[in-house]
Image (cartoon, rainbow, N blue to C red; front, side, top):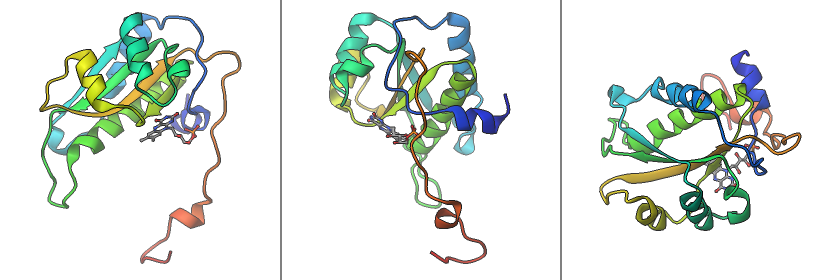
Length: 171
Ligand SMILES: Cc1cc2nc3c(=O)[nH]c(=O)nc-3n(C[C@H](O)[C@H](O)[C@H](O)COP(=O)(O)O)c2cc1C
């Protein structure tokens, strides 16, 4: 699959089949995360892959769509150990983790899996459920699993002229 094909095919999957994801597929998905770029090559991301049914249900219960996310094959809890701030003033933690998560999402798409980013969750409850230490930032969750039925479609996007300009700020 070409990269753009995977990008076109990816969408936020909010309906999952009751089917476990094979270990080989999970290995490929996490390899895609491992190979992501990171500032200073710090690689300070940490991913807790939650397969345990009871824990997944408890995690789903602290998201905005408990009934959907309780059914995912896997819930990935993406964390950062980094408090490094780049010269430009931006913290690397969320940026590095986001890049790795999107690698995961695109690799999952190629493998016929669905994913959904999740920022609507109670981070302190997630911390408690998984025993994540206080110093570690919980950046995002990502649901991952086989889509139910035909799956879904990406939602709309702004036209290119609205988001890209050349040579000077023209928005
Ligand atoms: C950082 C981030 C956080 C998101 N959080 C949630 C969320 O909490 N719940 C949810 O259902 N979707 C969430 N989404 C999915 C977005 O709603 C979705 O990507 C957007 O509407 C575009 O739709 P598409 O991914 O199907 O193209 C999130 C996406 C991103 C990138």
